[in-house]
Length: 492
Image (cartoon, rainbow, N blue to C red):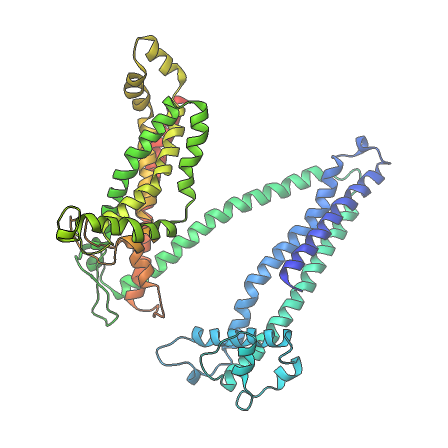
């Protein structure tokens, strides 16, 4: 049974358990809910949750464990001489999975029967032609060992899927039956249901924490492997970024860090004044009708995908800057300072536009949090509206505004698509904003793109770059949250 329909069936069983459990509890009390220990809905929820939660947990664990177990078993069937030189077993296993999926599609569409799959000979049969008919492309002829492994993979997957369906349904029905038997008027259903809900809330909170810990640990282990192959002094204190996959790479983070901070600085120069002025206008001067229209319209910018901003930088802002700074006598300014559309200024301007709603929304909330009594006191002493904003509201909101700027800076430092398409790919030190540069996030993408060997320092350096970027943005976020929290405590 497909996983989707299995989940639907589990939900149906849980819904039936809710109705029947509630009905049984009321029947045990003679139809008088006042004789029940808990409300009738708690009895129904107890049966529904008892049927749904254990079965869903088993389903998730099974779906995670089954592919790993099957791949470990099937990979042992592949001879060592079948693995190409300078390649990994995972490449062969990807062919095995592709052939297995193609066989499934061929059976579903009638191109092959289940019996023909078991008896198919890759040396005499046209497997590529058959799989091509069902839309599965193979790059080379399928060797007999790969076909045998694909058959085993397909058989184990089907067996595991059947066993999963039976086990999950039995678990759901078992939980349903046990909880249904307990649905009596003296059963403390509310206590049990509230404990289960509390456990689910704790699990949800723990998943977020454990995911973060897992990401950090994975980066730490791979970074440790990188520093076992490459000098940490060259990484942190070198001045050249030149990966070449020949063993003599120079992998220094400093040119990448310079490009990252330079582009982020230009983005903040654009976003902070515009966003702050917009927040001041919306919170202090705009009427209710203007605010109701302008604030959502401004925040639409936050919903635009970053790839769209990247295209805007590459196709609009970059050529516009070239028109001004890069066409010599044919340009508007008659200078030749810019050689292409990609530059620090291109990426910084577009990233600043992207950050405007971020700064504006946070600053608007912070300014509105300043007590009205401070404004009234200033106006009562004879200050004008603008003097009140400059000398009372902004100083009071300054810690929160600084926190908003730091959060925007961490957002700018971690941006990828805009700098990939608008900043270029050259790692160097330069103060000229019209030159192409690159950032940490861009290099992470490039180092992990394509068929690369994950045991080489040129690939593992991406994890060291990611960990450094994580520490940098984490520090900015912690500092921003500390400032905002201190501000909020002052006025609560």
